Image (cartoon, rainbow, N blue to C red):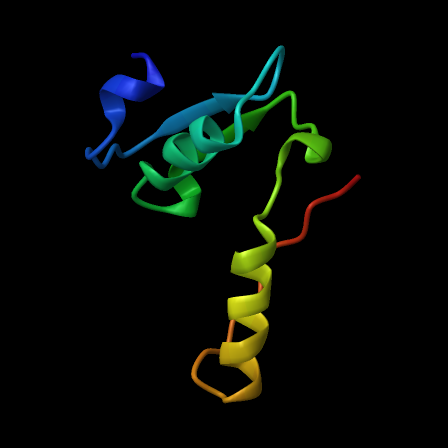
Length: 79
């Protein structure tokens, strides 16, 4: 299934490949469609293709400072 067709759906298992040209919004849509981490399968991981908007980083830092969120990663990416 093409990623754009999965938008708005929740899928029990997703395989996401970082091979070739990858757009950031496509990565987000693909990763956000899976119901659980156990159903997520990442192929050809290239951490350089995972980008975070600077406004998202700033807002996350602001929320952490005000103790409105506590985001601790449940896993780490190996380079």
